[in-house]
Structure formats: C-alpha cells, structure tokens
Image (cartoon, rainbow, N blue to C red; front, side, top):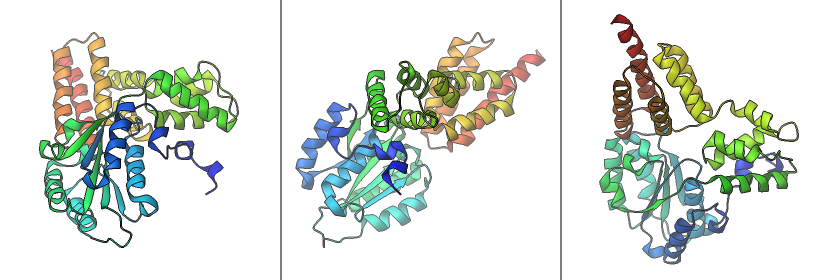
Length: 323
C-alpha cells in the first residue's frame, strides 16, 4: 500500500525512542536497559490509551532484534484472546522455540491489553515466563497495572506512561497537518484534545477523519466527535438513570467499540458524571459503579459487565417509581 494512502496514525508512528512524544523518563530508562540487552528483564508498560505504550514495545523489539525483529517477535492483543488456551498454545509454543541462527539474544512476546487477561491465564503466563526466561522476554502492555497479578508485576521492570498534555498533542497535530498540507483553524487542536482526552492515536485518527474535504474547522471536528467524551458518558448515564436501558446500552457500545474508549476509562468518566448529578440516591449508584469496576479488575468480560451495570442503574428508576 503506498505510504500516502496509509492511515496517518501508522504513517507517523515513531520508529525510534527519540521520536516518542514526551515520556522522557520512560525513554531514558529504556535506553539504559537496551545498552545491556543480555540483562534485559521482562517489561510492563502501563498507562492511558494513546500514550505510546504499544509503539514503544515495537521500538524496543526493533532495537534489540534488528532487521529480523518480525521473525522473532510475537504480538498478541490479549483482550481478543484472553483465556488460558491462548497462553498454553500460542504463547508457550513461541516462547520455548530456540533458534540462534540469526544470533539474536532472545525472542520477544508483546501482549497488548494484558490487563484484560483472566486470572488463570495470567497465572499460567507466570510459569511460562519463569520456565523460558533464557529464551524469551515478555513485554506486557496495559492501561491499568492493577489488572496484572502481583506475581507477574514482580517479574517485570514497570514503566508508567503519562497521559499526554494538551500542548504535546496539539504540537503533534499541527506537525502532521503541516506535512499533509492541511490547514487548521486555530481552535481545532484544542477541540480535538478535549474530544480525545490526551489519546494521541485517537486524536490523529480524528484529525484525518475531519480533513477529508480540505481545511479542518471547529465545526468539522464537532461533526466527527459529536460531544466530548464526558458529554457522551453523561448522555449514557442519564438515559440509564431515566430507565432507558436499551438507549444507554446502544450509546455505550458505540462509545467503546467505535470511539475506542477503554471500559475502565468509561467508568472513571461515569463516576465524575454521577457525582455531578443531583440524584435521589447517589450512594447506591456509586456502589453499582464500584462493583462493576471490581469485576473488570478481576478479568470479567468488559462489554457484558458494562451492559449489566447499565441495567442495574436503569432498575433504580423502577424502584424509585414504586415508592
């Protein structure tokens, strides 16, 4: 596929640590580890979406393994394949295979969204990490390190990525727009940042979507994003609390699937929204949120849990109506 036809998020994906936006402490620590590749521990990258975690994992693989990195790297999205079978079949098979023909130091397995793995699969992964540490290094990528069991965390060097600030995201958007010959209205970078909450990947996708017909205006950005993320969560919570379960469910699925908002980020915004509302029984609504946040941490299926949460919130309306 010609470079100019690629998605901008891929076209401008950093190839070197120096090209990563911000994350200076992460870059400095990784440079020191890469210099002593034979002593490299397993790595755990934790932080908000769009902060560069997966990109950094790929950069590390490239720098350690050189031109043969694709042959010696296995990248999996653990939220798609969360169970113990994935660990036993795909991960173990790749991890135990020894091949030094290219004189690479080890194989690398990148597990994206690893905090979505079940407890049993994480326990199985711990044993594999121990058994094949001579042959393989793991890079676990997650939004929340609390979703990773302690025995796994203790076997990794942990890197915490920070949410990107508005200035950093705005600068990157202006740089890409300039390279693509796209004109931006002055307030566009700020509007995109508000709609994506520091997620640079989502911000670049939004910029490209809004640039389809020339100059990117504030109105075009609004058309692409609709309301801000917080505004969308407000609509979902209001619909649920008004007893409109099906409406809230559809909007929630759109927000998580189409716009890619992580489920636990959704809960964080939901908590902010609920505490700002004048509810008849706010304590019960917050208790419901806390219950489903706990279930997600324990590895329950996210969409099912959020759907059940909305059903419980909608049931509060029916209960209050019977009083």
